[in-house]
Image (cartoon, rainbow, N blue to C red; front, side, top):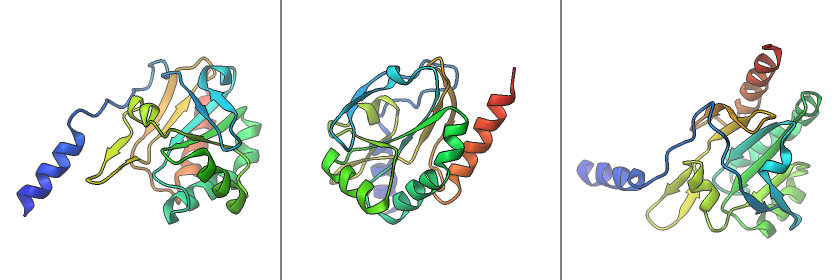
Amino acid sequence: MRLAIAFLALASIAGAAAVPSPGQPAPDFTLPSQDGTPVRLSQLRGQWVVLYFYPKDGTPGCTVEAHNFQRDLAKYERLNTVIVGVSVDSAGSHKEFCAKQGLKFKLLADTDKKVVEQYGSLHNLIAFKIAYRNTFLIDPTGRIAKVWTSVDPSTHSQQVLEALTSLEKKP
């Protein structure tokens, strides 16, 4: 049984794209938001971007993480930072999630799973694919400044704010 579980875990990792590293240019993409408008990452240059990947709209951990980003939204805005969430859910699912939870930032629909894979965040489960809970802090020039993998949704927004504040203070 343990061997079968280990094999399944390795099979889900095999072929997965690598997680981009700090210092690398952030891979560009265009995805539809919850309101149907396309969002292109490169159009967000000139400001910091918190690009966070999450598994599924409406699930407990994803709701906590989104609520915490929403709670801290004014702090991010003071730091010239935009928050963008990505999952493999549809734009319609995102629209419903945002309305129900009062979210004011963009959630992007990667139904083709290409961007999730491009950022090394595609989780292949046996019956379906979802996003790992990974976050990329992208600087105003479009380079990855910091990466978090397998984050704790209850404390993650505070971690990102602390890192952002620290990076903003550097010359």
